[in-house]
Length: 372
Image (cartoon, rainbow, N blue to C red; front, top):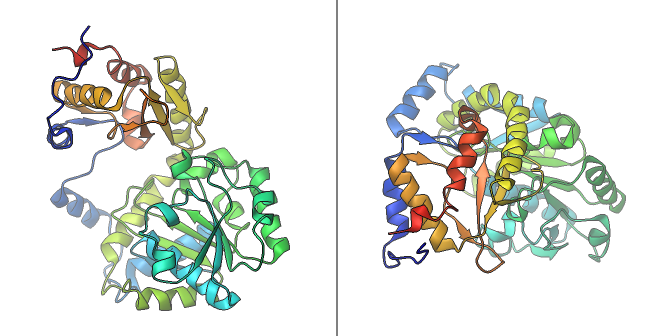
């Protein structure tokens, strides 16, 4: 078989976009067209009144629901997680009189925010580790001097959606308490973490001073985040929300979609995690490797023994032929000749049989899609 790429000059990104736009079936869920999404929001809106600059309406109800779910005294809704976490870490730094914050080297705070913690807030970053795993108490202890806060990302997305065990998390939280430094949970995917940790949201959140959660990732909302914690910390975060331009005139569309995600998707997290475990096992038997094994959440990495351009071309050709979207863009792995992609199990994934997913992915390794 000829595995050479004959379309090397083709813009695969544009071709993938065109193929994706033409798809009629999606493994990880479909993004609704704008008009359809807005009509769906209108059907689930529960309050006649809307918020004004984040006060009242669906926003107030959402904040109450999140505070109750996480077992915290208060919560504030913000348009983005970047804003939420910058604000709370700035609060901790101002209170502690030090700019030093301990984070993981693969944290979203460092990899995807244009160095905002240092550029905007002049915080000093202390990396506990950059290994694709959760940080350990001894690595925290190795960071000398006074710290304003410690952050833990649950799960660590850029490490492969990895979580600590419950016991490991408890021990790490105790190390922060013993040192007298606030623990902040970057819980962008905290909703998805409860099946593996086998504890409730409130029990997990009780280990930390503050918690950030996202509404557009696992819950499928339009956008938005919440920061939950003590009333005085949340009040200060609201002030930073205003200072940083995040206090929008109204936030009700985001709040409506967030509340719908809490009602309809959150109860499915156990089922989504179980399906991820089943799919990971099936893909391993199809010639792929997965990480972590088994998955800690409903998301995991799939590794393929094919160069990136080859498997990406095969994936695009399959999309064009079947009008099925099975995964995002394949990326180069650390091992030469291998590629990887994130697979996120959503409620839409449950509409696929496991053997269908195995067959769809297996076709990417067969070589038939690369001939010609």
